[in-house]
Length: 308
Length: 266
Image 1 (cartoon, rainbow over the protein chains, first blue to last red):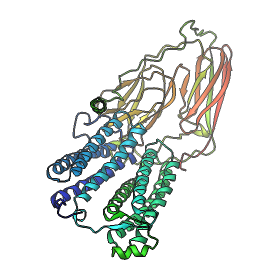
Image 2 (cartoon, rainbow over the protein chains, first blue to last red):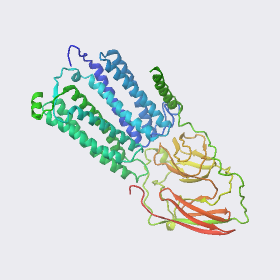
Image 3 (cartoon, rainbow over the protein chains, first blue to last red):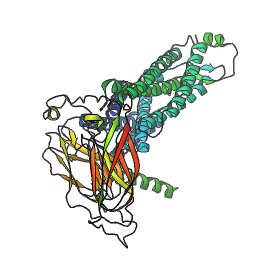
């Protein structure tokens, strides 16, 4: 990026975007808790609870109402974020990204209302769960685009090797996103487990290919090496959590109510999926920021040296 | 271009309006029963020739151990209980007698029509459990749901053939009166506030049904002579059918036996 035309770092805006992303992550946990505790319809009215903002906080209402309150707070944070971007950002596309986040959070609220009013049809509930992940990724991207790293002058390198890392990251991001849809559909009883298992195999292969290519070709380039390390770590943890979540669901079926081990493992698996999506998105962005399309080089070490 | 934009805006506004007003719909208090297939030439029951089917439902094998419900987090739920409360999925009595089985006449009553009973079927929420756990009700008959607990419940039947509804009932609230328009065995009912609360409602098109108690016995009286398909339905073991022919003033004995299997996950 040319520093003469680059927008100035607005550390306040960046910190606020990070705060909004963290709040959204908290919202994802709250949403996952609602599903795992089977509490989605404990408050049959929407948006208020029987016309009140202070319902009796008992049983499933604790999860459902907390989710709505945190969601409303994130909605409010997003309005400010979009407004701040619109007012302070020099980059036109960033202003649009802020508006996209705002549109996303509004659509998410409507889907949340629909899922309550329509008694959780699998398609609507799965769409609600999927849009949550997309919205989280959007806010993470905004935080990243306003960071000092993104706005600094970073030397570009050639995307050498085959397949190209830029393509690999895009494919991996798309696969993780599709896998999250399949996971949401399974969780909300739209599909069986098989599509999600097939998705897990595809995602694992793509994540290992991407992280492996980054590690081999750019071992001296710290940001890319970091991305590879995070991808390896998250996919390993996520696979273990997925197996654990499945076992816990089968084990919990014999109990008359959701049990702690099942709730914990399924919630952590769900939100780790969101972290994996955000990480693949960040990896894609870092890759596109640092690597320019280039000729295929047979000697990968040459690239490492070039980067160093 | 302007037209397509207008279309998108209309869709968005429409979706928002649906969300606000609720396209799933706030349920009416009652649902009109589905019209009978044929109302002409209705047969009448002759009490002088009526017979009955009597019998019992048994479980073959050891009944699975029911898990304890953990409701300690809510004192309003534990209040009415003196000891641990277990799931009611499989309840047995002496000699393997199986409770909570709906025994009903599935077919053989063509041409007869039956009035809807005016007495409501009461479902009581007490100690954060439904009483009874399994209830039989006729199509169109009122179901009266009451809350005797000092905590809020929501009553959420999940039918396949009837209209779904979900309503809250705080402590001391008036009873909720509902009915179902179509035959369905059986509709699961749950409370999303207290996820262990589960019940089943069997909606029948005739009055020949009974839900077994701990002695496993049933008695279907005043049956006109004829050949019937009798069904025994249990929430874990599913339906079991038998054919039975009842002559004038005859009493037929029928026994249903379910093979004991463990609940899912065991």
